[in-house]
Length: 28
Image 1 (cartoon, rainbow, N blue to C red):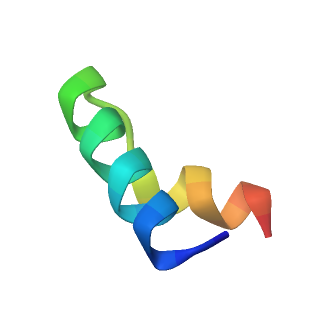
Image 2 (image 1 turned 135 degrees about the vertical axis):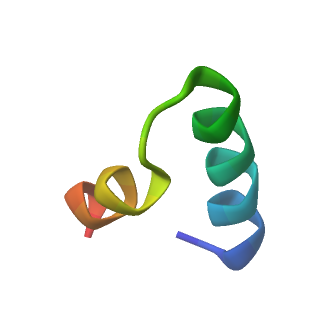
Image 3 (image 1 turned 180 degrees about the horizontal axis):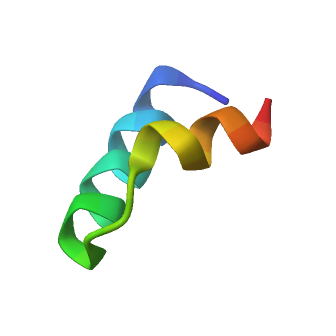
């Protein structure tokens, strides 16, 4: 995952009230 993709997902998850870090770790 690129840095940009991470930032986009982080923003999306913040808006939806979920934890972006746990989501990102699931993708690794």
